[in-house]
Structures are given as structure tokens and as C-alpha cells.
Length: 71
Image (cartoon, rainbow, N blue to C red; front, side):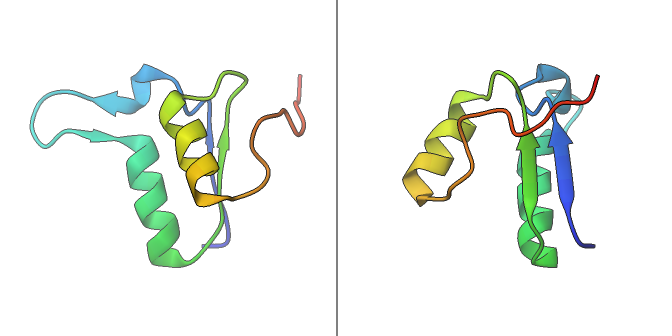
């Protein structure tokens, strides 16, 4: 696998609350990217607070703006 893209990562529909086991697709994508040693692109016009804090704390570049958008 060369790249994982999760568009509209802030959307609550990516979160499963029941039945058990519960998961969030963003977390699964992050784990999979680490496992496969490949880049993860989280796309959103309104990023989640968790994503913004994670990027700022890690010092990774590329957050905070729209890179491109297809109509």
C-alpha cells in the first residue's frame, strides 16, 4: 500500500458506537498507515480538533489549509 486517504475525516459517520467492538475510521487509518509505513492524508474543510492538535503536537507540516479540491 502506498497511500491512505480519508476524505472528510471529521464526519461522525466514520465512527461506530455499537455494536462492540467500536472504532473510528480515522484511528484505524492511522494504525494502518503506521503498519504499512505509508503516508496518511486526512482531508477536510473543517478538520476535527483531535487532528489539529495531533498535527501541531507532532510538528508535522501540511495542515491548516485546503491543498486542492475537485468539483
